[in-house]
Amino acid sequence: MVDARRAEREDWMSPLAEQWPYLRFLGLGAWWAWIWLCYNSIEITRMFPADQQPTYVLQMYLFSTLGIAGSMFTAAVAWKRMTRLIDKRPFVIGFGAFAGLSTILLGFSVIMGAGVFFVLAAVFTGIGTSMLCLKVGRLYGSVSLGDSLTAGGISLLLAALLYFVGVGIPAEWRLFYLAALPVASGLLLSIGSIDPFPSAVSGTGEGRGRGPVQRLYRKLVAASALVALTAGIGKGISSTLADNALFAHEGTVIVFCIGVAAVLITYVVNRGDVVRGARQAYSALMVLGMAMMLGTCFGLDIAYLSVGKEALWLVFSCFMAYLAFRYDLSPVRVFGIGQGAYFLASTAGWALGAAIAPSYGEGMVRMGVGVALAFLVIIVLVYVFPENDLKRIMAWSVDGDAVDARRERHGGGQATADPQELASPVAPDAPRQPSTARAADPRFGLSARELEILDLFAQGRSANWIADHLVISKNTVRSHLRAIYTKLDVHTRQELLDFLAGSSL
Image 1 (cartoon, rainbow, N blue to C red):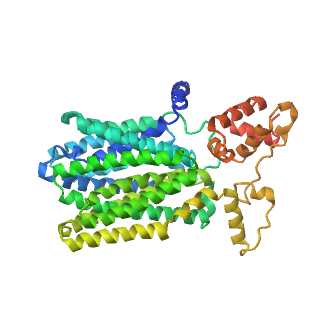
Image 2: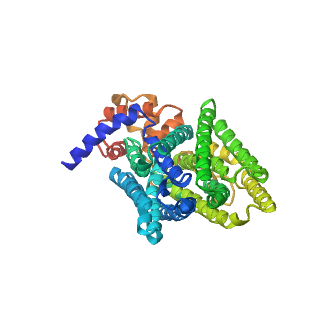
Image 3: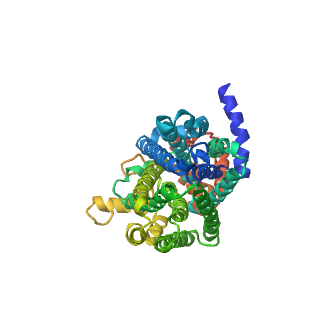
């Protein structure tokens, strides 16, 4: 009975995801709107003393992001179990509801005298929303780079719209509207399944040790953390010095500029070559960030550094998701470490900015902070994660990484592995993949394209990976897979593998 109800829900939800393929990706927009309304406005602290509201926003951010970072790192350690959990719709929606309830408790904590109650509620919001962020990684880690950047840009624009709705509704309803956003995020992210034909080898790339992909990933994490640190310093200074009106004004301008940046990123990525567009967007954002940091030396409000930080967060997150997608890494582990480091660095930046704030009014201090932050971004762009690293991320193949790994094991000499072995994404000591020779029998009627897709699918590739690899649509791949299942009279992946192995008649 329970399985029947679950099947009915899946049948009802799946058409929504197929008719509007970006619908579930918009869950990121609702999550992002919650972030902005909590950290770039004073809506969550409306009931607190007026002269202390920005200060409480600072404290809320510090404790909430520590909760996010802690949950992320914990999930990265237990990524196999966590992957199974976040694939369950009740788990994701439940944590969205938990974050929403914690948001309401946080807003009303002033009645309890704030203190410990405020701290616990802030940490709970971080824990709840961290599960939504992991779900975002799982979802965005199932599509190609162009799709993830496009979906992310649309989500960013939606987040901006939801933000302005939140600050425009009657004041007595704003806290409840804010609390509804993580619930909406969980519902959207859980629409449909990630992939009707999921990969059986997701996460196998985790065993590649110190390979080039892992080195690039570590550089990507370091770059995102340093960018978060620089912008965090700006928000820490702003939230300490600004009054209510100025803090709210800054947040509105920041969100509007981020919405414009989202439109531009989506346009650049979709006007032609995705790789070139991604590299152009990254370089432009980094140069803009340096210009804004130098501008703070001459009066530009340092809080506006958040514009570049949020836009770069999207780009870095999509790059992380694409690494998981392209190289069979665990999206949960990739996002857990990457986003945990990002939020931890941002927390440190806010705390450091709050410490600098009392002296920031002095000209030399303002100049020194602006130059130091700009220099840090230059280091990121030129040394930590230059534009060429993006080209490497998008140009390397799993096969090439396997060749490099074997060469390292043989002291840098030529690889001597069998060509068929090099074509396989699994380790050389793993069981050989089933042959598709039996399926090639003319009596089954499989076309050449279906045999090609079957070969990749039998290796453990997901439908999304196959679509990206063959440069065809995901729906086309799924149509071919359904036809293969029908022609071979199998119903599950295991039945298909048994058939290819010759154990099924």
